[in-house]
Length: 346
Image: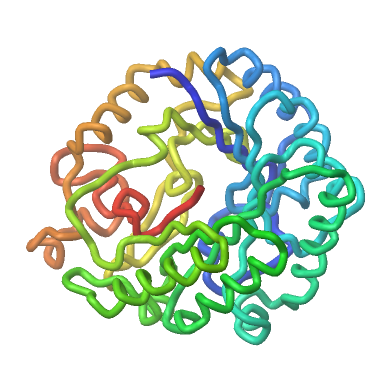
């Protein structure tokens, strides 16, 4: 399998401090790509023959990284996706986004009151930046960047999905992406909507919202409404990897940093899973390491335990961290909510 898609986290700093963000549980100080690391990453990406897509995101805010316009320009021949809170939009970043970004994914989690309670920032400023971007697109006669709106749903904002559709439509968005909340503490756990068994009410709400979005001209991606045994890792299956702000080559967002999560009421310690640092070895060499190959094969073949629907989970010590599962697989993907289509990132 070759590398087809790379997630870049040019910084893990952020200009917001959102209530539900799991960067709150991280250990260590925030960092960004150094100029040397940036140049190294660009050179490594340009050497990959099958690379088609580059996603600028991670847990930090990429528009906070001073070198973003430079990196966008140097990777202009790739499909570029930018995930952003759009809280700040400098003229330099706006010009680079209009010139090089194919898809812009913007987080909007409800109407003005709910948005500010979650993001601690006024929604109107985000909408103003998006309107300016749309006006400039129209002036230049461009169809890119295509705007997608992403919403993290919980009990506090579940009744505002249609409002987010309308907000997206007002700035020319083409799609709404809905993801469940990933709890970082027991307080968040009380806000989750997905369940272990039947959830007909939530399924019906998703179906009705999907139809509403289509009538407004927006496509939609909606997560599952309950835990299912079937698992698919979009990161591994798409030939992806991630380069963290420290330059660590990790397989996915979940293993990009050490921290904690709460899964169905169980507190879990997460450990970063790095297979090497881009400053020390070539990216392809890291990707081809035997231990990285074994990990990808174990994920593709579902050799990891399925902790979420295991009857023994309440008495198992192994579910308390991502270090190893009861099959001896390390790191453990048994509790991964991304693989169950509960948490979703583009």
